[in-house]
Length: 122
Image (cartoon, rainbow, N blue to C red):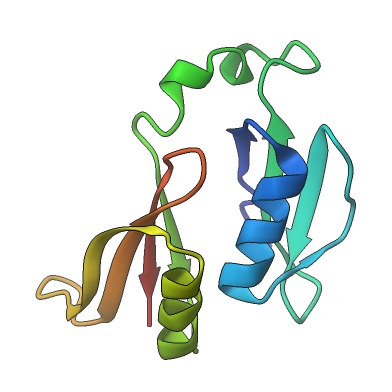
């Protein structure tokens, strides 16, 4: 088995954790000021949040580089519910729900609290 468990740098771990939980309906499996593990309903890790400039990780040392070269692509089965959550959170909307001609999937794009680009796709 191979699975990716991405870790992204964030300014405020607790605030970002709450935001992602409200957006995706995931839950905390760690909690704290410096690191968070977010899991889905099957307790599979979907995303980890790490406070910028903690623990001397070289790629988590410059918050000005947040999201450069990265798209967080979430495949979900409840796109309409997550779209409503994004609107309720006043997320920065990059693209409203639409049919992606390349993938043939319905999707929308938003920015998170640290300006990461998220694509939410059915």
